[in-house]
Figure 1: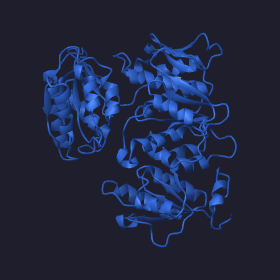
Figure 2: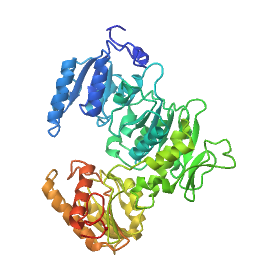
Figure 3: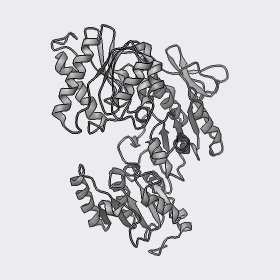
Figure 4: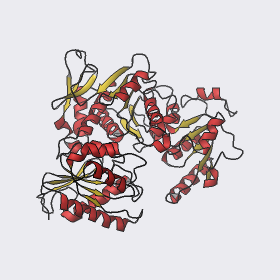
Length: 521
């Protein structure tokens, strides 16, 4: 190629980092974390790069810094809404590398596809920038919920086995950073969103999983069918094992329809007793009937529920969704040769991230739990299913999702409901239909970014919840909705809730009482 225009056929040759990338003309859409990483990687390999972004008032300083760095490296960076309203004037490129936030119907991407210009995700670019020989295998994970926990469980188990491993992708660290790290990894665990999978065409993971499927991001995909089709792409070309959820038959259908490599196995995970080629639960034992020679008649113990004690805060029985995530992670790691004792060690070492059914405090028999990460009804259902008696704190942006099925399913568990956020009325109406005797406290909505007002709101949320809660109850912040109507992120929403709990109860960050007794101070 050597600096000449790249034809579509030439793009097929760009399948590893040692190929001749010089002369490639690339348009990178979006100047977020993944967009910056993609532009940086392309420039380092000699490509000519144009970057476009609408610009962001909240991230202006970061974008200006990134644009300056890329400009020094030789990129043409164009920031402003006029640069993304349609195809950039006079632009001739061979490939578009797009960021996850850009839907396929975006004017720039739609025009690229109309012109026959290939569109890659940053995941596709990362796969093509692996070394020709000795590339680390990928373990790829998607699903509506549980992706982050599962990919981090995989990372922890791999490290417990003595491997140099990293969790990347939608979890935070760009995949490109891991692929190009000067000290190569043994295995890379990749969390993938449906957005990232949509424009991923050649990835061939060692093992892959779709954890579950529920309506989400339909505004991006257009339909549940399109959303599911993008999730299913993760199984394509898988080498060793496609892991599916026995409780969600749609994921097994995805495996059956996938074009996998010769010898790839279908492995189920279940909260019930595992059948052959499954991992599951036998009483309190995590059992493997997939990766043992005696799987026709017996199973191998890979852990127990007690091994997940620290992962669930050390104070409660592991919730079902955490157990399911652990089983999926066990199946994925067993597929790449990890031994049962190493799986157990990883489960024992794992700690759940903040804002995922994290115990904030336990006072007077009431447990306060931050599950702010539950940004859709399916995620909230997983948390609500774990507790028999709940004061539920909910609300935010439902993104078009329906909450009727969720509320109907947990109606008998609700002590009271405390609502905030722009779409709280929809949840209130559902509670009125399915749990009419449950008290509902509507606390309104506060302007986005006014953190002092939001702190006062959370103080009110905690006060109302405390009035309703009885010994044995769980006060559960599991909003079933996104946070951006009020908060900068689900993390800041969870932090505000936790801070308000500690203010009211006089507890410290360890969840104990002010005198270390667990009693209200």
